[in-house]
Image 1: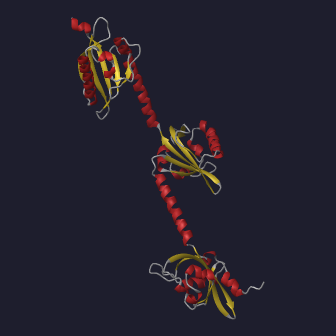
Image 2: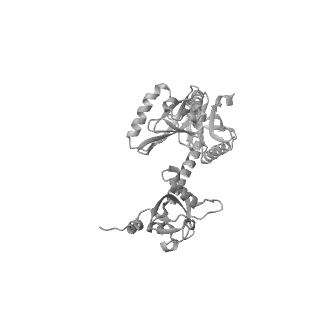
Image 3: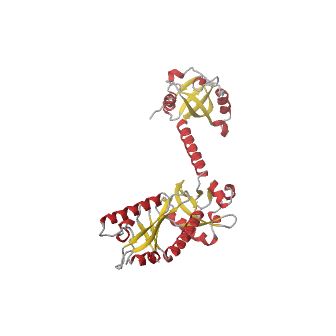
Length: 387
């Protein structure tokens, strides 16, 4: 096989120019044609500045740099430089160039190899911008966010995490996550991470892991709801945990439970007959006194107040029954509007005649003054009416 040096030069996979000392281009290979868009005939005889023009904001003397590099071919910083070139179509693109010198027939030349690095630079910029955007977004998240490497050392600690745990990020970078866990949980946590690593799940959402406990700088233990996600970077796993402080939620739940207990104690043991209604008049609670008063075997849960026969009037008197239904509906509407209504009704449950009931509906209001529930109360005043 006989391959000439000219064929090797033209086919060389790296774009290559050969320059005279004053910068005149005397040869260009096919890859140089492809990258620049100029044919060999269009660039031969032109100065290299033809391909690497100066700009007002970039006054780089390319030829001076090339001469310097060619004199110091082993100097790392002088062998490579990112420059801006201009294609035949007038588009700018970034190149990475290197240069060396050689002699032929007693004449000195410079050989310049270069490659188009615009796509790579664009990818790097996009990756950098995406990383910066993600980091800044995570920094201002309301959730505490902590990232770990494969050894469970902290690599990221956002502002919310700093505020919750009392540490600055720089104090914890490279430290084990176990520093933020009560000692009694550390061994189990390590096992959980190892188990998660072996699993095929890329993430576990809040609620899947149950409550976890963190340890602040001051020694306070904080309950968290946590999500965790795993990524493989360079073949190694990394983890990011999203922690949500649930102290306020737990306090609220405890207050609600205590409030529920107090309500139950009052409601179930009240001497007066009581029923709790929703805003549509449906019965959702019915106390023991109400069962006794109405002589019911079971509470009429789910029925509307006016569907209960012994409240809506004499079943044999259709006109009276309709009036009773209308009166109950009106009382509910008044309650929904935030006002109390009270009147006397006849309770038809006894064989010895109707009982006279002092009846009222009172709204239970929220902080904004809107009705949340309605409380219906009945007091037997039959005997009092006969006095």
